[in-house]
Length: 356
Ligand SMILES: *Cc1c(COP(=O)(O)O)cnc(C)c1O
Image 1 (cartoon, helix red, strand yellow):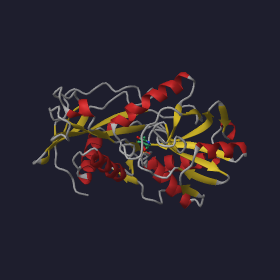
Image 2: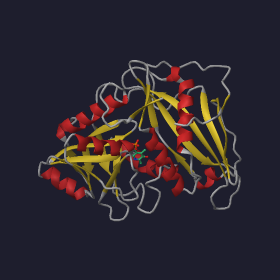
Image 3: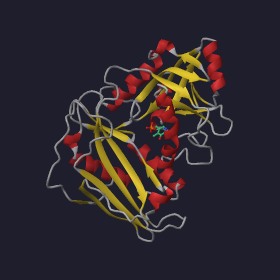
Image 4: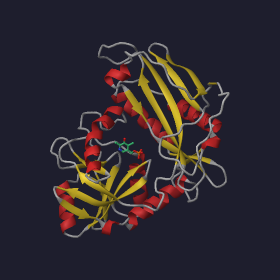
């Protein structure tokens, strides 16, 4: 892989590291960050690793007004023998560029960005927690910085990477969550930006999440925005159901975000010879399967939790309790295998783990 030549300005004052036993998600940030600028006509320029610091932007910058911004999320893991592993990082930068294309933002040099990320992680290696389940969360993102209020794609951008040590998602074993099926709000519609990792989708999702939380539910199950019956995602995760021995996940349709964990779950289930299909699936079909006693497992998939089992679904006053509110055997196998590959403790027949 070609190495991106960049400038490095090291911080003179190191931060006090938080206690790695009490890490939360996305609360602490490391000593340095990566910045790369883009100017129309000039391309990408001035890649640099600098001390972590606030950024100064013109109040008229496009990102504040029209939301031209894209992000990614992945993790670095420290193995027992002190190797640093990333999980399919090339997939993240490929997806970054698909999102950029949708938001009319400039294409990033994927290899260059991965090289910059590796150099940044090397500098911050002491920030990678080592306890089981912990990791260094990586947030690459791009913003439109041009100071202009006209509605058109900006001419200047900034790509950045920040790093945050995060604790284990499951501190006391895997607890299945309660999910409310959302019948009023939608997260995204086909033709919109649902398949791009962009801020606006998250802003659009907060309201339903708040209401679910007030009612004692962890998150919502999103239905499609057109017919309000086909299942799309759960919270900000992709979703899987096991019905009568077969695993089903909604087929990509333009409003579903194409998760790298989702893709890995599908590839892994195929490898394990467990039937897996991608197709449309309605909430009515789930309800019928539940009533027939064949709704065996349900789980969300995403980088943060890897696998998040669903223990209960609430749909129009009907509570569907899945697998007695316990994690199912396929969910557990998939969780153990994926986290094992990520941490370098399980064999990786797919070549998914990449050394930094
Ligand atoms: C990031 C994201 C996911 C999960 O993607 P992973 O690559 O598996 O982390 C799923 N849904 C939405 C809406 C997302 O933003």
